[in-house]
Image (tube, rainbow, N blue to C red; front, top):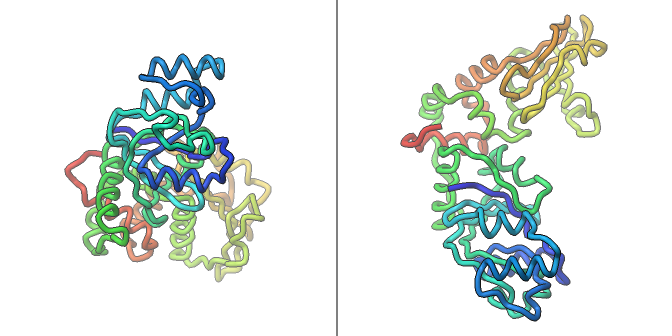
Amino acid sequence: MQTWKLSIKPDSSVPSNDVLAKCKEKSLIGVGWHHGYVDKHPNDLEEAKKIVIETWGEWPYELQYFLEDVKPRDHVWIHQEGKYYLCKVEDDQILYGREIDPEFDRYDLGHARKAAWVEVPAKFISGQIQRGTIAQRTIQRIHTSPRVTQMHERLFNELRQDPEWEPEIDDKELENLLSDIPHSCLFLLMTPDDVEDVVAAYLQSREWVLIKSTCFRSKPKFEFLMLHKEGKLAHVQVKSGEVLLEPSEYENDADDKNLVFLFSTGDENPYPGRSVRNVYPIQHEELCGWIKQTVWAITLPLKIRLWIFLNDRENTV
């Protein structure tokens, strides 16, 4: 079972949200390249390839992935119109042109696969899926571990039965379950906002006070500023993914009254280079240890994701 990102935004004469609605209505996922099927209809994939190549001069990678690499039971994530959808491919059947819809040409739906849809509320969306669905390509693989895939399978099954489903969380039990989770796995479940929230909460537990007015994207070098009762100011930089933060790049921002705190979820040595006075990289062990001992300070959406992930203990990370 693999996980994919798909954008249903073909070159159609109707708005893309209408194309999305058509796919949902018919329990399909689809892509374009319909033009060759206006006067021809393939009987199988090989004939479809010939028609597409005759029309476009190539067999696009999007069609190869969508028709050849995506398999039954694969998960396909769609993020459009501000909503997330998880689709599960039902079988090997491929629909072409008029098999999809009598007005397939208006919708630019040349190729489709049968799939069941569920809408997934944003609180269930991990950082890994959030990052994966913003990729520019029409279709792209999202590499997930077997355990994360199983978490998504549970989400699909629960939400299909009850769109309002949400697990009941026991903070004490969650704290026990968190004790063995690897740092890298924890970060995969966290969105960029989750990471910023946790770093801010951690520093506030160290007697730093958040200056709310500094939490704006228009200040690109630092995510926010914090004050300490000793009169010091903290400039905080937080990065998700594999971004490296070199302390030396912040040397001119730091002095005895202006401290710099850095945090990156990067896997190996996220703070390369020499150490710098008054620049403090926050180590993974330090932050994750605090998270595991301070479950009450985790936001509810992150708690929900952690609870679902950790309560399926039959699978391995």
